[in-house]
Image (cartoon, rainbow, N blue to C red):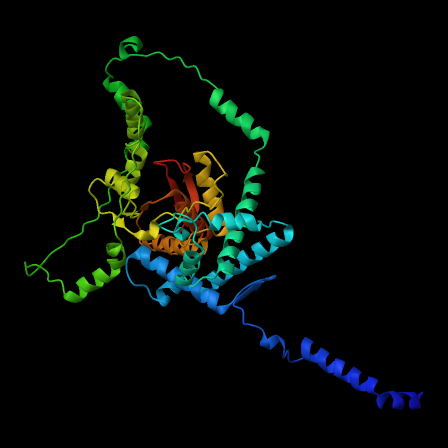
Length: 444
């Protein structure tokens, strides 16, 4: 047996076996070093068979920076970009997206090449201005300007179709239980009948004036309550200027105030106009009456505004108009921190149709569940902003003031979640209709 091993060790087969073992250790890395693996291209994010290399990630970050600069109308540094969206949140979002696309491909959600080609040929940016036809040279030139490659844009279009098809299947499969339909029909078809009558003083008769004996009896029976002293409390605040002169405000204080409100003051104000075309004058009058309806704030909201120590409002026009309607000339602190979370429409194929009332819900689901933001604020960024808004409101409320915020439905919901996480309780809820209120309190 020993001689057999000796003969094998001296043969060419033993040398070949050692070479195979060495190659195996080189490929698999052995226990410490993976020499061939270290020769692969580096990856920033990897999920399944999908990955993002440093050049692609840098191009995405550059695009984010350009879009933010276009929104803000000023130069933005990478430090400011990462303050709005931390690097960890960006990498997490991209990892979740790549993982979804890798899973969808394995699950069989695979858009065909003909569909991708048809989509590319439909982009007007790739049309020759003379022939008004798709130009392959113009297509390649536009991609080169945007630091894109044909393979990358085809992959992005394929990913969008995968997301859209999966979402279409998800929305199509949503079915409310029948009991909800029965409850809705019952609430909308039920009726109420009421009858009443008016009781006047003459019908009830008149009471005679009380005698001295009756008054003495009443006072003796309620002596304890009548002898309780009535108390009043008051606060006196005296403002005086001993020198009887105007107080000078230093340049440092003016500069500090300007820096505090610079972001809000530098945000450009925008206006949007919508034209409604009516076939007849009567139809136009009905449309105008419907638009004018509901423009008066309810008394309950006016009372809340009157008792508030501080009023905040989003910088959006509809929030500003609400503030003007209920603030009664008081100071309103406008802050872009309270604007609505973005609602970009999903990139569904042109054949995908939905009634208008469903598009808002579908777009919100796409933004919330699939991080579809079209270069606008992501869900992670909105969560950070909601936390900042909640902490600002808590700090103001802890100073002893009731705080009223005039903002928007979904972002109000996000801020409310942060308030509840910090121990605040929802004590009054009118839902998310126009002019509705949601009141939070915390016991101290």
